[in-house]
Amino acid sequence: MKTKNLLFKLLALLLAFGLVVSACGNDDDDDAASGEGGCEETYEVRYANLATFILYFRDLEAGLADFGAQNCWNFVAADAAYVIEDQVAQIEDFVTQGVDLIIASPGDRQALIPAYEAAAAAGIPMLSTGDSVQQAAPEIGFIGTDWGDEGTKQSEWMVEQMGGSGKIARIGGPGASEYVEKRREGFEHTMGANPGIEVVFNQSANSFTAEEGLRLAQDALTANPDLDGIWADSDALALGAATAVEEAGIDHADILVSGTDGEPAVFDQIRAGSGVDMTIALRGYQWGWQTAEVAHQYLTTGSTGQGYFIQAPTIVVDADTIEGTTNADLR
Image (cartoon, rainbow, N blue to C red):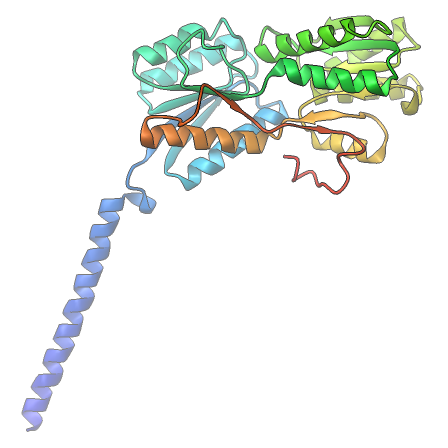
């Protein structure tokens, strides 16, 4: 009897061991089927970033990278540092790698067309974000905004705050991107429709930096010490302009400064009521995440599921609208 009981126990142990081994084997099979990290398929995605020294583009890239890390992307970004020739070369290099999809923030509407066409010829979809080549070359879509409308929003805010009269300076951005050109058109159209506003200074910066904003604002204030407002093409330029106002000994209450991008330093100045008075927050991180969602939809279905133009989130931020928000809310 004892021998029989012992045999039964031994058989039970062997059966249990067999089930454990089988279960472990099934786990291995599942891992092999789903790929490393649970991915059934990984996607080679590249991003041709225009300039990581601009916060908006850094945040946009971060949104893309975070989405990709959660959705089986092998994501690699290249920074052109606003050198258009480098951005063209980077896209061409991505094409030779035979990747699944390329995202780009083109810094020049014309110069990037050959690179887009090379991608199309290789069967690689191009998705534009931030700026586009305006369908002059094959794009599966453009996540962006109407930069003319954004320039108009900023300009109309300035006109309203100035009471429809006064002297204004424009510090524009460099290059021939859709962003710069369309926003300039929005500015000039708005000022042309308001004869009480005199544009006494209208120059383009060599780069989107606070140093350039400082330099050009100093020139504007030297020639026009009674300036009522400074319209800048980016928050970095606006921060430089605010510094110039302070260095000139002008009370910030006597002059308006506006920009666009969504720099935390600008949000802080708006809350404090000293320095930059208004910006259009481009919410780069959310913009990047939205871009990634569109790209992933295409990778997994062969279609974005939307039209060519896909509106990105932007918001006017001033002393009224910033109440109750944190800088993270506006990222």
